[in-house]
Image (cartoon, rainbow, N blue to C red; front, side, top):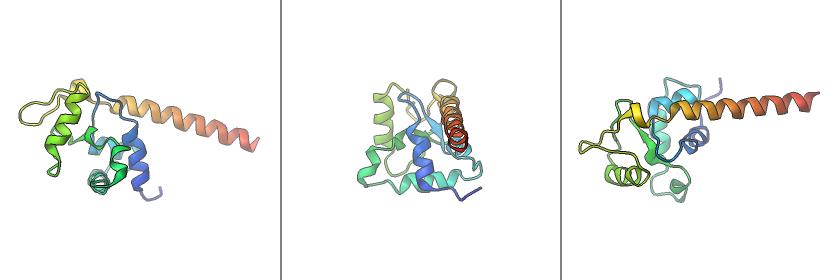
Length: 125
């Protein structure tokens, strides 16, 4: 497999619906690189203070235990999640059993890949 790229990570993060969250490790899994959760964090940190940060909903990414672990903008992340209807506890925890969006993103990616595959077959035929 080719090396994981920031753009690939951002594409997956853009698929997380409003009112849902995903873990860094979940994003890495959906990118096909399950051991790259830390790299996902690097990619999202690279968005900090850039105009692109509004185009990629970084605030929907939390750690695998359900906590906001972003030391740079945890209150901003909490505010944005709560505006989208995600409940965040006083200790910055989100109930993943209610708000995890990985299954939704997985289905969306599977559809995208199926469409791309059928287009490729049509182009060859």
